[in-house]
Image 1 (cartoon, rainbow, N blue to C red):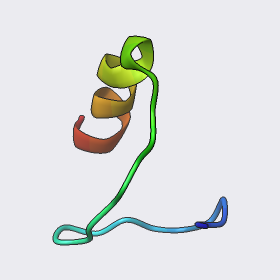
Image 2 (cartoon, rainbow, N blue to C red; image 1 turned 90 degrees about the vertical axis):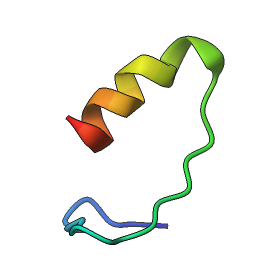
Image 3 (cartoon, rainbow, N blue to C red; image 1 turned 180 degrees about the horizontal axis):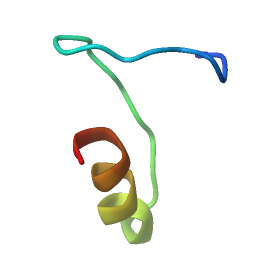
Length: 32
């Protein structure tokens, strides 16, 4: 479980469990 100060860097792998309606929002957060 990442902490609020976790820094993601290029090449990091992230696994996210989401609901279908949140998919686009999560994609924008992680990919930009």
